[in-house]
Length: 98
Image 1 (cartoon, helix red, strand yellow):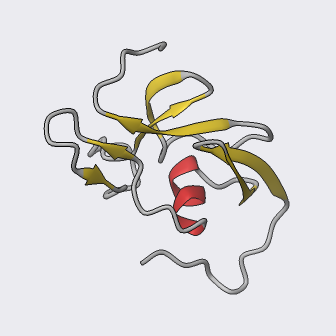
Image 2: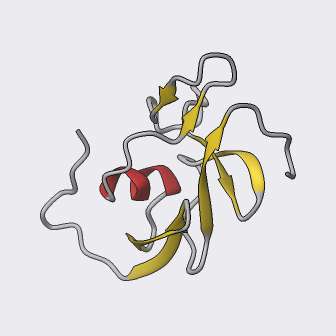
């Protein structure tokens, strides 16, 4: 699974994930912060509800889609965490901007 390099240090920021407080490192992407917090999936597929986790972590596969501050279909691997950010794991299809 995902783990940090032992020498990786940095300031922390507080975000919420599905209403739960999570501490992340400044500079992390949302996907990396979720993995570091032990959250093993970002979304569920619209048809079968199968959980999906980040795969490529470089913006190609779209398996890291989450809702960030109320906006759906955001690629968690491309968005850096910010203090007070609200993240929701995405359930099924979400309209952009909803």
